[in-house]
Image (cartoon, rainbow, N blue to C red):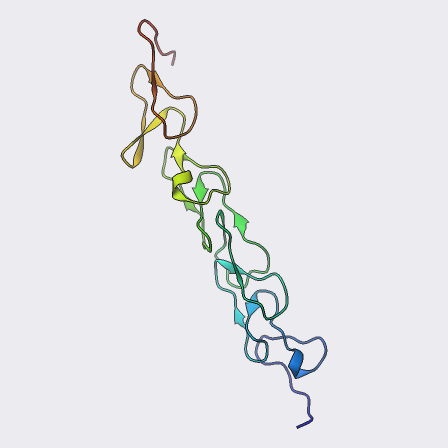
Length: 146
C-alpha cells in the first residue's frame, strides 16, 4: 500500500523497510514476524534470522536471551551440550574445568572407585593421583607415612 510499517515484535531494522526486519542478538525467527528469545542453554551473538546456537558441552548458562557464548564449567563439575547449568561431581570426585560428561568425574588422590562412589584407600595402601584406578598396597616391611 506504499506506506512504511514498523518491524513487528522484537525485530529490528536499520534501513527503514519492512522487508529488512531482522531478529536482534539473543533472538531468533524470520524477522518479518515476532522474534523469539533464545532459551536457557542457547545463545545467538549476531543480528539476523539465524537459529540460536546450543551451549557446547563443558559450558552452560541459565538465562534466556544470551548474546555471548556460554560460560565454561568450573573444576569438579561438567555439562552436556545445551546445558542450563553445570552439574557438580559427587564428593571425593574431581573433574577438570570444562568437563563434558559425568565420566570425567574421577576419584581424588587417596580414593578408589567402589561401585558408583569413591572410598578412601584402606590402611597400608595409597593413591597419589586422581583417577578411578586402584590404590597401591605398600610392600611387605614398608609402612605408610601419614
